[in-house]
Image (cartoon, rainbow, N blue to C red; front, side, top):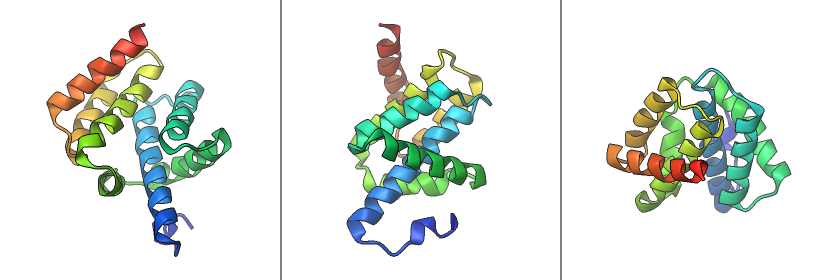
Length: 146
């Protein structure tokens, strides 16, 4: 079932929304797991991000996250998921994606080397520069400091 997830025969709008939602959720989960501790607070943050970004209910966000957790466990890399995000998110809005990734990193109050490395890797895959990644981190860090 999971292998065929991205190839279901749906109407174009539903397919776009599902692909983008699940791809972003997989990336968020991968970031949360990159420090080898995937906590309830990180899962809740991911639900919150999905709710806000896609204007969905908490229950819908949890369903997306649960499926994305399975997809992430089976994934060998994140390239196909970043390609999906790039397909649907214009270049000028991709720093928003980096910001939500930093939110997940900073949610537990600890910034780990694995998390830093993953964000540095994801930036170019999403077409975001190192400079934009750093500015996004600083912006999100300010919200966690207040």
